Length: 456
Image (cartoon, rainbow, N blue to C red):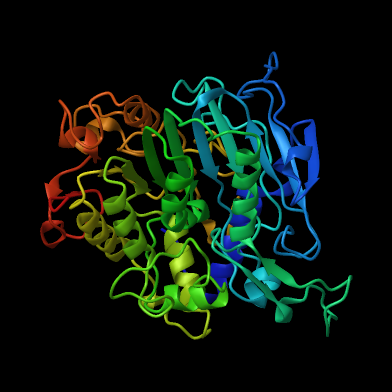
């Protein structure tokens, strides 16, 4: 059981981010190219090769570093260059993957207790992930892996003067850079580079969009733009481990802080206005309606520990005296998640994959599906998922009261291969909604968080 107190929350998140995304685990591939933001053709796509004897290595990863005057192509610390990666493959298949890495809102979360990564995760090995050589689903896909280091879920377009780094900083200088939250420009640069290579001139057979954690937040907003840019024959959009459950007013506050409302990816929806009453959920529902032939799916743990922690930390943004009783309980989190998913289920092109337990992210393979090493503050045993995960999570299959259901990886293969189809087909709702547990409503669940909501 996680002991959550205001004094523990920030150190716990800092520990998690440093362990899961820490610089000591970063080993970038050898192919590296920098280019001026306005001249992306300086870095062409390299031919694909395969490395021998390296488990999880798909071969031929390139690291791209766009440069520009000012801090638009810098990470949140204002001094670390932004980078993304690309792996060539079939010209007719493309996966765009938005990496995660936490979120930062103010000086304290950025410096004292950093709750977001300050450099992109550029490992070229991700065991049991969508990037792995032994993953049949995306083995022959071109992959654009969009690094993340802006703490803004890829929807930021702001530089904060009051975030100057350095304990003695009183004004911005080379030794005291500003905090740059330019995730929107980072993702745009990566996609612009890809299109400059000629990809997208002919219509893609398949486009897969996946966002993990903070990347999933950004994908709620970015999906429409990316689908329209590439206009594929078939497409799927996967939100891995961030459903967007925030305290009241948090989304408006974030849109303002990140200067998001002026961005071209923010849609005009009748009756909604950014930043006042527009939410990620409103944007996604419009996108699902506008792209009715595209499959949209959420992969989420029933009581995702990291999502709950970020909800709790957000309570402390304007106060340090929040009572522990105001924090999000597992029962309430799962109830809100089911209410949200029930509203999505009205769209026939949406599906969900729910996992028992508290795992966070399944598609990026950061820890091969095992526990994060070392002990965090408070003694919580964080677990990270992988494509091998099944709906029962860490529980024994027989304890779930279900026949064997597909793993996350198998379900994604069904989604992309269009076998049965998440939005219908021979298996119908069994493929569209994967969940292990008794089907009931929360009012009859008796405090359990392993049931499957009958409203979905």
